[in-house]
Length: 391
Ligand SMILES: *Cc1c(COP(=O)(O)O)cnc(C)c1O
Image 1 (cartoon, rainbow, N blue to C red):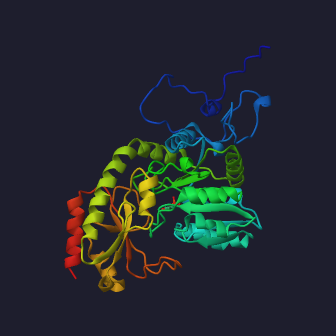
Image 2: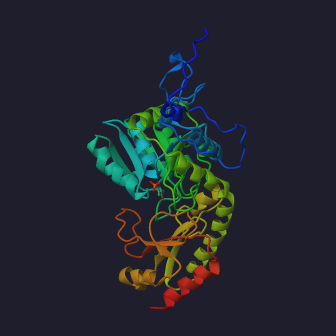
Image 3: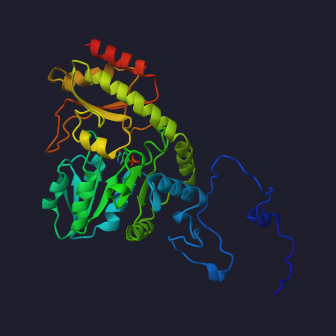
C-alpha cells in the first residue's frame, strides 16, 4: 500500500528528523559511543519492553546500547561467562546480587574480609528488609558447612579479601554451599576477571568493580556482574530492570578503552608491586607483608593453587614501634604515594586502615594498604626510604 507524499516539512520539523545525513561506511578502531533512551521499532506490532534481548536486543536504552552491550560482552568473554550486566559501580553490583537472590527471611553469609560497604549494606539496609547476613572467617574453607542453614540463599566470597588479603578456598566453600542449595557470589575485583577463573572454581556469580583495573585510570565508576547460569541470569536481569540500574555509554567507552591496555598494565603492575612488597618485607620497620604471592599472607598456598597472577594491591603490618600516630606521620612524609581510596589506576596510593573491627584478623593500628601504580619502582622505594628515615 503506497502512502500519499507529505508536503515539505517546516524547518523546525526537519531539524528533528532522526534520519542520518552523514555518509555511511565509517570504520575506525575506536568503540563508537551510542547514546539513547528511546530506541525505535519498525512497526507498531514490533513494540515491546524486554531486558532479555534475543533477536531484538534494543528495546529501551536502560537495557543497553551497542556501547554498553559491547562492554558487557567483552567482560563476559574475559571472565569466561555466558552473560554479563554492567552496573553503575562495584557497590551497585554487590547490591544487585543481594537483591536478586535474597528475600525477607533468607540467610546469607559474607566473609569478615569483605569490602566494607558490602558489609555495611548487609548489616544496614538488608537487615532492615528482613534478610539476615552473618559474617564468617574467610579462612574457614570447608568448615563453612557448620554455618549453612536451610534458608541460606547466598554465600559471598572475596578473594583475596579487602585490606587483610586472606585468599579463600573458593572451590571448597562453593562445594559446601551448593550441597546446601545456596548460590555462590564472588567479588573478583582483585583478579580483574583474569587471575582467578571464577566459574572454573565453582562460583555462580562473579562481580567486579570495573572502576579498578578495567577502567584503570581513576576516572570512571562502573561495575559488572557475570554468570554462566541461566537461572542466575534471569534473577539478575529481572532485579536490574526493577532497580533501574542504567549506565552511561560514555563511561562504558572509557572502560572499553581501558580493556585494550589491561594486559600491559597488569603485567607491569604485578612486577612493580612484587618488587615493592619484597623491598618492604626486608625493612626492619615491617612486621609482615600481606601480599598473596608472599608466604606471610594467609591463604598463600591457595593462591598458588588457584591463581595465575597477582595484582597491584597489598597491605603491610608495621612493627609495634611504628603503630598509630607514628604510622600516620610516616604516610604524611611520603611524597610520591598519594593518600586516597580506590585503586587499580596508574598512581601509587596509600591508606592507613586502623581499627578494622574484624573478629579474626584485625591488626589494630599497624596496618597500611598500598596500591602500586606505573611509576618507576626505584622512585617508589626511594620515597619509602626517605619517609622511614625522616622519623
Ligand atoms: C572498590 C571496590 C568495590 C566497589 O566499587 P565501586 O565502583 O567503587 O562502587 C567493590 N569491591 C571491592 C573489592 C572494591 O575494592
